Amino acid sequence: MFLASLVDPGIGFPRRLARPRPALHHVRPSETQAVADCFISARTRADPLVALAYQQLEIQTDQQFAALTDPQGPYRITVVATREVTPYSDAGELVASVLAARTLEVPTPAADRAHPLLGRAAGGAYYRFRAVHDLIGHVATGYGFDRDGEYSAWRVQRNLYTDLARWAAATELHGEVSALWTTRQFAEHKAVLLDRHLLKRGSLTPGTRDLGIRLAT
Image (cartoon, rainbow, N blue to C red; front, top):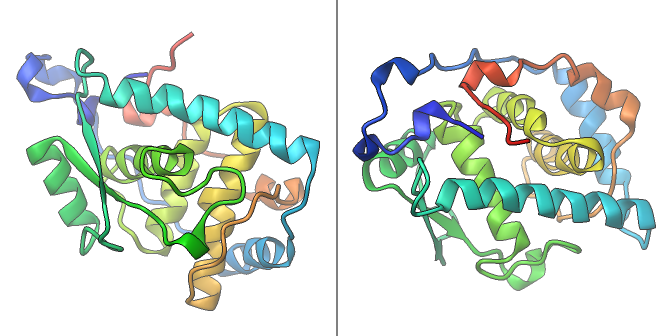
């Protein structure tokens, strides 16, 4: 995996490796509503397919997290837990802080906001997923925390997941966020898989080349 805009400048990579910021994509209100309705109506239940999807999501997220935080790697990002619910006032502050200090603060969810399968512990699976989202979905792209920014972040990040993990990532990055924009309230975390037909509307996503991303084989 290679994210040019997150490379630690201290290691002396040539500037020609830099890539332009990817274009912002605008989500249709009808898509937001349909995806939100699907997420809100879904219920977490014991399902082997869902469990496998989230297992793959965790494994693939951990591979990305390890690459981003490896002290000997090109990014060298430090991730720390915070009790602040919103450690950054906006995406601009997030981007500036991470690029300046190479440190990302990740809030730990309250006890009543634990994810059914990914948990809530500092350093745990959901914590690592949140860190990867902030670093790749926002810092590497420059996307904001607004409706279109989050939608665009999902369109980029989905390219870094495969198979069932990609399906689970859609729930977290598209379903839950769509519910937020529709209800104006944070939705409960769920372990569900959204209707594939709804997700096809956002399937024509930019390639990983838009961020200078190379996937490890």
